[in-house]
Image (cartoon, rainbow, N blue to C red; front, side, top):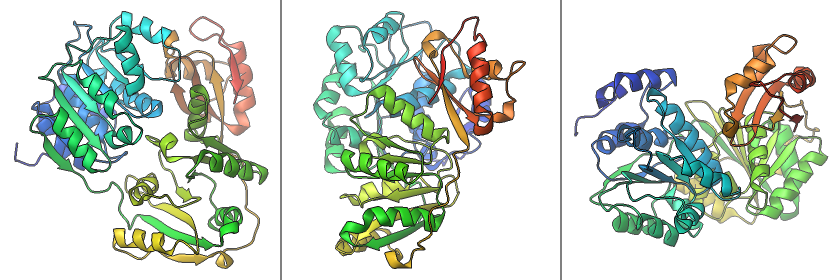
Length: 461
């Protein structure tokens, strides 16, 4: 196990899984996968410091899938996540990784949605459960979930769960599991409370640390310095000066999210706010629209954006610098992924010199300062988002699959495949992105077309 592993083929995985990994585009192993998989597949506990986008899901999903007995419909693996968004993403990835085996059932258990359908789903059995600590505890209390036959317990983004006050819940949940389980702990940061959690829940864990998933030279970082009352003006001028049409904008409070998204909409942009006060279905819809490129900007708080994973995100803008230096690194790490260049712009006041210097010192490099007067005063050029998102009133519980939606859209009288973007099928609804100029035609066609033999309500969001 001391020999470095560089390919999935060296791990002793079945050929059917190796073929599945190739189809999924897993051509090479990430650093976290190279370091963690030999140990996790051997059954060892690990505590791994790795950020979103590092490939950590496969690092815990591959070993837990290998231990699943598909003929036993008890819960054999539990993955705890801090938010519903991350839980949904993790479950989707596990389902894809499980395609090499038949009849592996993955159930998501999160708050913010009715518990009744979850109880019904669990009654039919589940091999793997992914969910948030609060809702998992609800099911344990109601005795609608049993985890006493568990093989693997995964704590994903454990630092954020502790930040959100889930420490006691995590311990209560772990108490319902067998003592000889395998426990895999993943955390973006490694504060003292993570070390304590590991000590309490794990047995001789291997410690794995992966350097930040983004390299400083791939992300162009710049500070825009303005006076205290000039942040709104600085934001609009920053967007215009750098020609930004698609970005996540981070704020420290929910109120700032609402204010900034309103400012951007008033300026002609399609901007969506994402924070904890939104109903869960609204949060899903906001996140999907941005991911499907039918909105210019997503204005988010750190907690709401946790687990946010958008492919090819060109830019991140900090409307205000975070209070925690590690949070800054986590924010900007959402751009410049997979070897692509990214842009991270931070609006900061002339009173925040200490923060600017601390961030530069943390990275061992100078971060350029641009005075507000140096930015051009031209009005931002606004191109309409490339796609429009359509919402269908059916989802996974209706056995709806992306292929069903694609087939309906491209049936005679519909649109062509190249006019269709991302398709996201959630539990009770589905979303599909359609090129803007063909969105009206696609909407009318879906309204007149039966999907899986039945009429499905469709609307534009």
